[in-house]
Structure formats: C-alpha cells, structure tokens
Length: 228
Picture 1: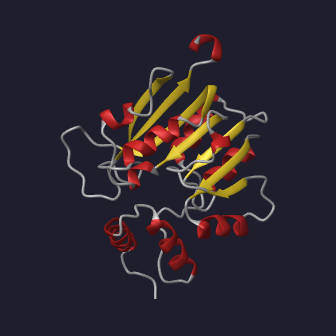
Picture 2: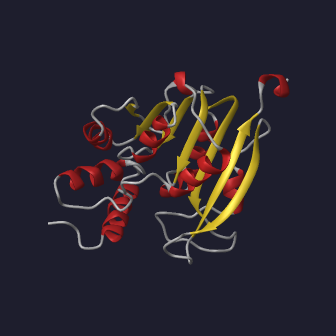
C-alpha cells in the first residue's frame, strides 16, 4: 500500500537515515519502496525542471557535444532533456535503484547513468564538465555535510564551465525543519570561490504555490587564461 502522505513518508525515511549517521541512505530506500508500490517519490515528474527549461530558452543554449553532468539525477527527466539539446550527458544518483529505473525508463537513451555519491566523487570527474546542473539535491542533506556537498558541486566545473543551481530559497533568519532545507543567500554563495564567479541570481516564486520561492543561480569557472 502506498504511503498516504508522500512528503511526510519521505521525511520519516530521511530522519531514520540521519539517526543512523548515513545522510544519503534514505534515497535508495525511497526509490526501492516506490518500485515495489509502497511509496511515491514526491519529485517524480515527467517534465524537466521548469527553471532549467526557461533558462535554456532565454539563453538559446545548445549542447554541441559539450559535456554536461546532472547531480542527483533521480529518474532522468533533466538528464534526458539536456541530452536532447546535444550535450554529451552524464547523470548520477546515490541510489542504485534510481539509476536502474532511469535506464529502464529510457532504454534508447544516450545518457551515461552512473551510481555515485556527491561526497565521494570519481576523481576523473573533477574539473571536467562544461555544464553542471544541480537541482534540489544539496538541500536534502543536513549540515553537515550540506556545505561540503556544495563545495563538491563546484569542483566538477572545467575552466570556463557553467553551473546552474536550482534550490528552494529562504532568508538568513528564516528557520527550516527539513528535509528539505531551503538555502539561505549565504549558502548559495558557497557554490562560488575565487575562481568560480556568480553570474546571475534570481529568486523565483513557484508557479503552483507563490509562497514557495526558488533560487536560480548561475556560476562560471574562470577560463585558464583568466585564472592565470
């Protein structure tokens, strides 16, 4: 029987995982239960993240064979969208069940779906991607290790690469009983450093619930010439 309140069930799974000092274990438990018809994944939507689609449309983005990476790819909606734009797309999730489900849903996909942990990234991925998309993943982690996870996101960008971050937003003084933990302006700034510069930041009301706001933030790593 499917859990009556998917959001509450998800939070309960997460709380159990945090109590076990394993902040990511609950993802695979949720996806496994969903495959068995015992739970619903609250973020399992058919369409790609709208803030990604709108940004792509606004900036006339084309992949042209550039390398893209989707963090916490879930069941593949955003990865498949980026691949359709011509990106050579890699997508990873900490949940092996999510990755296998994504492969099953998209049997003819060009996306390279991988099982990986943001906190333990493959060395070959560091400083390797032209475009990195982080959507609502780090906000699902407690602090610690949320700030460490943010730094790991930054480390994936190649020189000149673009990072697009989508996250629920809150003010500096607003509390949050997560997960998720909407990001404060200070936390958003942690995606950048001396070589990764914030290009733009928007706080956008959710189209279905204006009480919810989301960040859409763009960063770029300096090119080799600029960094030198």
